[in-house]
Image (cartoon, rainbow, N blue to C red; front, side, top):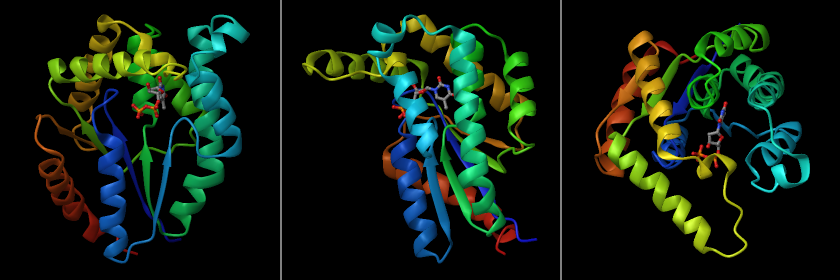
Length: 224
Ligand code: TYD
């Protein structure tokens, strides 16, 4: 059975992964590959509903505080639906799937950020993700200082834009982001085969080149 290739993009808020994902998708498509892109949470109809509950800062006004375990379970409900509806069928059809965030985000944000611990996240992954691990994870990890600076700038921008609805996660303090950052470092050390960490504060173009190099080293093995 043909099997495509599953690439996830990870990193703290504001690490530039969404821009890099779009650029990589365009580059792979120009090279004749079939590419499917999605982001988590979201991507399916169910996932978009879950996304608005999880990210909308107004949610807690109408629903009350969201318990960390409920937050984790909703992230995984979104993921299970995306696997069933989008990711698995695309891989079975031989596509390269580029996913903006996946289980590493849950490990970093809910596991470390919310303090639920990695074990619980990894057990949840085994239970609901149908054994689907990325073939490659591109982890964009600017320096901690740059990450915090970008996250703060985003918060201030959101606060200034009257009526703008900032992401619930973007209201957290520096220590939340520091825990996320260190969790990503731990994941990269634990799984060096899967995770390629791009650590510097290089320009968008330099990081794009680096990603192309990494992907083209792996692609010959995956062309179906
Ligand atoms: P989004 O606006 O897509 O941010 P970004 O461009 O940084 O990815 O919001 C996604 C948010 O959801 C982000 O703050 C991280 C958070 N998140 C989790 O906490 N756990 C998860 O499992 C996932 C997939 C995302």
